[in-house]
Image 1 (spheres, rainbow, N blue to C red):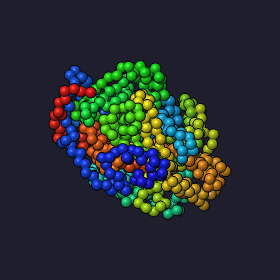
Image 2 (cartoon, rainbow, N blue to C red):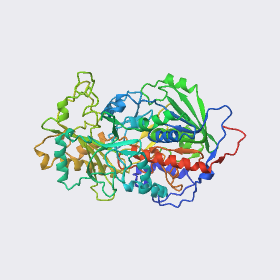
Image 3 (cartoon, rainbow, N blue to C red):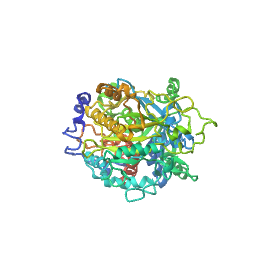
Image 4 (tube, rainbow, N blue to C red):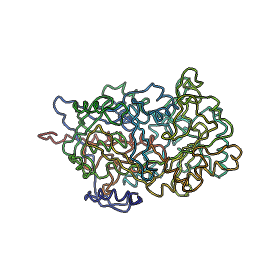
Length: 640
């Protein structure tokens, strides 16, 4: 609901609202009368490719969670020719992507140029006036190859809200459930709520190895139970049973020896499908710099080649970028261009191509193809914080003496498939709603195996374990945030990264939720059950958070996020900041689709990867269904 934003957000968006005279603004995103019909028969046609050109039926830009699923499904069917571009490369068998716990090295060592794009946000006015780390993935699978593998579907209300916002019941919970089940292979729960034949493997953390769970976890769980918080066996099952304490489920499968391995779209769908289908032409190490249009119809892309050609890459240099821009290439699509760059790069590419707010495009002298004020707006993210406590005795993990720094053969955890590294380490989830309404407000991951999660302020040791023992960590995020940020161009140069401003805690209700989540954690950890078990809170140092002002200072300084969505969101045509119709097509465009988290009408409750997989599966079905309406596009005398 954009009207819930504070004055700072409303003032920033007011010019965009006024510039779009075609739509009428109403009280909420979904309570407006929609008079626009985006008919597939009228908006889908086969373009002619320029003689002798590089051409395919479809072009996909980006092979992350969204583009990877669409490309993989096209390859499995192997009927259409597809050219797919990604800035990264095929990295499938390196330990830092396959071993579940090694995700920490991608986050703590963002100079891994093969898989990471370490963005920094604009300094956060309501977040300690400091910039925040915003690491994204690249290559086959994108961020799914480096994330922490927390599995979440979201609540029934999340998707019923999607249907309300878009005006299309195809996005309600029971209509998206078949797509969720299509991509899922749940190794833990096998019932009517889960898929068992998909590419995406889901398991319980330390499944079939309860003896590996440190007993200190059960002590904390007992303390939670004493607060009358229920245990939920399958929070992704019956949607009426979601809030409560549960085992964590993660995107981890098992190899033939039973070792835990990361499951992600690049390895489990895209790679095997691409090997079987020669009609899928994957071009990695490429930066798409512009979408080509004929009128309002997308007909192809402009791109450049090389590693380090985008300024967010750690191996980027100005000379590499300048050289690449002197050697532009072009590829054309007969049936459609599918943009899947993610919530930062998709709005950047659309704007560079002339699709976005007219005022911003005029500022950079970019010719306007479609004036869509919502491109790059409405950024939503789960504002989070971490807090750690210390038991008065070491954990079992401490006794392993695993190195958090350099590992060699002398390290007790040198074997990557031991009980520590073979899981993502997060034993428990707590989803709770202290407001007693229909929405989950707090999501927490809690475990003795969870390290301090403040990578900006606490450095990993160069060698050996951390210099403190008995750690029990909480990673906490607020759900259903009301703060709204944006992604803005820094330059018309496509090799320059955009300005990312999530505006964490800019809406006062978000800080209220965060303060409530903090209080919930403190109530649990200060309970009688734990009084004789703990030394106390060590991060932050309990002596530094004595007053209400101290607590607010800490929370605003540490706040971070990594689940940005909705910067090109679906909605109704009468909604002034909606970018896409419910079929994932920018309003007024032809043969153009957006398939990634930027399309979310509203952020979901939990890690968004599974929801992106679902959206991409539905996108593939929709795009294929449009082909029955396809006709030959009108022939133009000239192209541009």
